[in-house]
Length: 252
Image 1: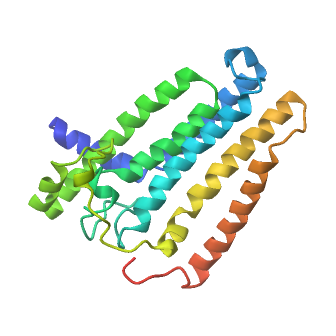
Image 2: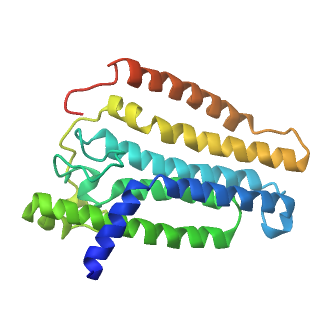
Image 3: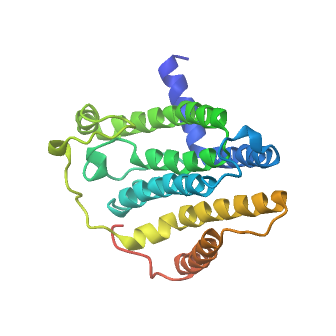
């Protein structure tokens, strides 16, 4: 099998299982976080006044990734930029908004969301390894997606793709094309509720682990409150999506 076909085959296989990578990162990250808490000397900010600022930085990185996803999803039509895992899907080619700056904005958003979690472990080597593994993992998925889009949209895709970087956005002012569609909060609330709750759930869980190991009860009530609030929001939105049509919107 030629390398091109092999990479596409690997990419399609990983595409269907791309929800697995975050779980692996979270499992390993949790173990390393516990190790850092048990051995504070392994992280220079542990048990210092600056630790809370570092944790807020990690949260900001996660929220940056979520913002990129929200901005991307909110301006896209139906059957594009989705969470489908059965196979590649694209009823139309997105070329405006953030797609006029980078070809794979959702994977860029995912990267920052999980980079924040990797940073939270306080283990520099894990952050480096995460970045390398993320690139190897998603490079194949991006390759498979682009092969699918090339076949479906032909020259329209290749002409668009030739102008844009795959992963690192281009910020040339003349290159940006305003979004074709209006921003849809309904689509965002329907599709991105999982990510919002997951971010604060992970940070709350790590904070609880930290306090249990330290034998303290000085919980971060800011994070705990947001975890509860986003959890309740998730339940409400899940109900609305499953049992009502409130979040449905024609063409989105």
